[in-house]
Amino acid sequence: MNRPTTPLLYNEFAPFLTRYFPYKVQKISLNVGFTCPNRDGSKGMGGCTYCNNQTFNPQYCRTDKSITVQLEEGKAFFSHKYPHMKYLAYFQAYTNTYDELSVLRRKYEEALQVPDVVGLVIGTRPDCVSDELLDYLKELSQRTFLLVEYGIESTDDVTLLRINRGHTYQDVIDAVHRTTARGILTGGHVILGLPGDTHHSLVRQASVLSQLPLTTLKIHQLQLIRGTRMAAEYRHNPKDFNLFDRDEYLNVLIDYIEHLRPDLILERFISQSPKELLIAPDWGLKNYQFNELLKKRMRQLDAYQGKKYGT
Image (cartoon, rainbow, N blue to C red; front, side):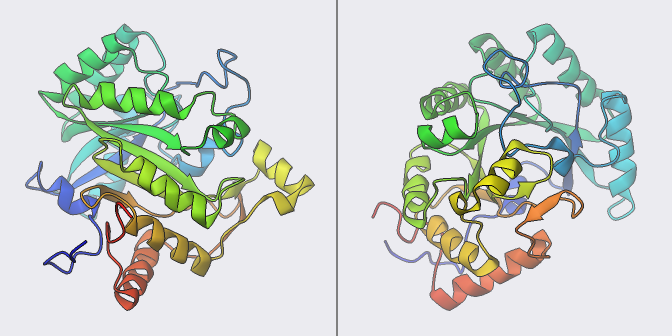
């Protein structure tokens, strides 16, 4: 593959947003009281083995507050830095399409009524999107910015079973195609370093994911979080886990990025969990610090997104 004519290392999320907005936008996370089918007994109990939603819920993000209050408090949190910023309501915690359509519609529409909210990002599972819901989201996407973000986590059904996801990769394929067929922007989320993952299997995963018509992709390293079933598994059998150190993860990630489709928008590369909840690995890096390390290493290696795509 010929090297791009620009010095672009990978497609970043902020420039992607400028296609839709002439101003800065910030996502505000919401927790609006949803659950998941692998928590309530529909498909299982206990949720994903790695999951503790406290790791990504800001202080203002609490179910005893209305959607409007959560958004207004989120706006107050961010507005001191950019007073003229606009916002995307990010339905993040648990499965945000897992309810009756009438309930979902009411919640999404409430968020859009809040001043300076200019769109929605809806995090969900691939087995929790009916055609009826997708038809409504198609209509919604025609009047506001909308990104549906699917938790994919892995393309390996054995891994998905082990982490108690309660769905298969075929469910992912089906959901992504049904969503994009309606013209809805569609994102994915994966975790690198789940039990059973190897450098080789992750590179293969990048090629498999690239066959999906995704617009955006979030990539996170596995983090062990206190109070999760995976943390208990690690205590009993640590040899089952390959927790990347920083340099190992950089090497795997760069190889992964090189095998990804060149036009995918890569939103982020690491997860930052609160120190009081984090068991390992703890690199002590913020997102922007890691991104600078990643770019530096990619320049050293003459690496760029899609360099090995299709090989």
